Length: 459
Image 1 (cartoon, rainbow, N blue to C red):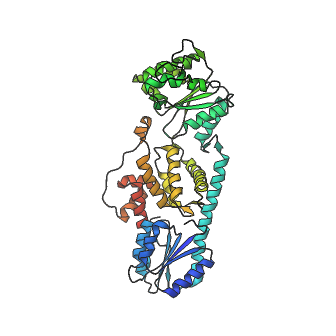
Image 2 (cartoon, rainbow, N blue to C red):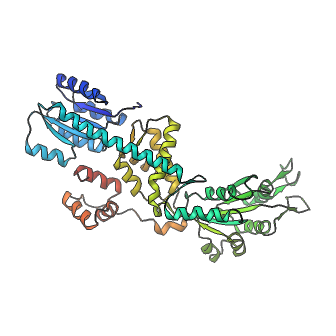
Image 3 (cartoon, rainbow, N blue to C red):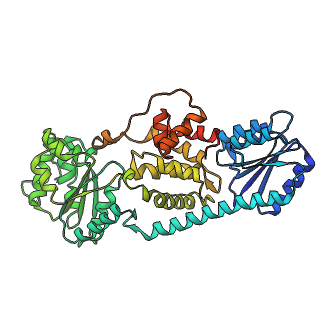
């Protein structure tokens, strides 16, 4: 169900009041869904994304506090207002502890309902405006498909601009998903070979027996099955750029064969007695530490120094968190348009989850997470539930962290006893409000820690 207006859920067993509230709230510019009891309302939550819920406290089957507790788990971004004809201080305190937005005593003035809806509406409008500003800023700081306003990314963009007109051989290093192919593409687009071919190649995809044929080509009849002559990757890229991704995966015998053509620009097709000259800009990339590979004897030192005339290092996403909000805005706008979804922003809780995630798969993992979230969401705002679901999928599907960054990846903390509200408050004070640090101290995952914050009303 794609909506263009915020949705208010009314859970009220009195049909007269339920009808009056529905008419009044629709006049305020909201969509409305009504339920006479809490059970069908809770059952509907997996398929809807309400921004506000007005819930009666005393209902025959399930009480308002139970509904509130369940909604904080199932729809943590929904703002819940409790309504009751038998108000008490104890119940009001309990409602606030559980995270209720407000507590209305019946009969209540509809002006108060209008004020509450206006407050929620203004918050949604502000989130939408922030999202629009970040989307616009992301477009303005985009550079050859990369987005970043952080100093480290601006330095990277400036270095690429200065190197592109002159570089003939370069090595790009960085963790998986940091955008190494985009950097190679930028060197090509901004250099003198921009009008010639850019040929990407994943070195880990070739078996040794086919390496020479794929890279250098072969003549007709050179081996069984060679019914026609074929140009290799270096000939295809002649005059342009050949991007050798995952160069660290090449076995040593292949490295020796690659060195000659990189060094001298000369190759020999399989089955041909004569050599051919090629003029190719070679850009290699790896997520391994090639210096360590050289010392371990797994990578040729001469090839390493030949490729490493210019080295460009890419920072992991965790080291440029200021860029996450711009990347999120750009990706969400892209996927909302592709999937024809009315997504106009993210809730604060969803933004916190994205900002605090470790992102071992870097920008690629962030992009995949948001693509899944946008694909499955029917709300106007991506919420905490959307992101948690997509992050849990990402944690199963993201490739193993690269060897170079294994030491930087923290192990999952061991299980801990159920913390009390007081224990959580004490730890938050000790770490100056840092939620990630507090979760680690308590031995909880971020997801479990956020659930406990919500259940105790600690926003």
